[in-house]
Image (cartoon, rainbow, N blue to C red; front, top):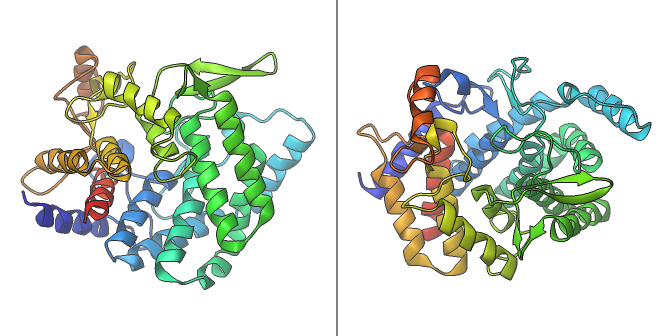
Length: 364
């Protein structure tokens, strides 16, 4: 399949799988993913902004705002508990994904995730900068401020990572999303309080999430001291450079982190992390696109182009991109376990299509 063909297919697949109210289904043919995630959706919307489909992106952002606007009393109650040092059960926090019509998802899932809320503030800000429609910030103000208060209060709480795992730790990739969202909105609206919090989060990452000169997957607090909990790398650490800018792409800490990602997780595509068992731990298309995006920022255009071509080669005859491919598996025996449990890996995955579009646009 040619690049232009896959661009058109990707746009069509994303638009065709957006609910009339605005939520993007994560994967239409994979029942566990029949929801809209704030994190995935934000990057899908960002891809649509980059391809000129700004109406689709705007519809998603309004959908998120509609989901959140009735959460003020809920968030205020959580903040009250926090201020009074009352224990908050993980199940009490806001969800990470919602039904396409905006209803809460009450299924058993790793719901307490902060990355989607930070990413949404960033993505909304990017959308406003792309379209010039600053009035949208006022239109969605209630939901924006609910999200700001939620993140400003709970940014340092242990929560599930972006793969819905490891809920007892704090994850640099998640912190990068929160940092990116608060900083982007703080800069656009010239709000010192948000910029101060973003600076605090950046200092926390640099002070507590670095081990042997590189970032780690997760940290936790032991005896009031923050220490690495999972000292390996995770490919989501690329987010600290692109797009959230905790550090520059050529920062020595980032470079050393990426060198370890390359040595442990890179084949032709990029895997998530060393201990990954999900469908055997294959190569993820969206992470390969992210790695290509990072390489483009470094100026390594040839490697970014190679990543793009590898992703294109994984499209099926209908132009659909999967979540991951089993060309290189970390644990082959686990692949059949997941096949028996849920069937074939998600196809199409809208987030894969979105990151292909982002990488393609960055190379254009």
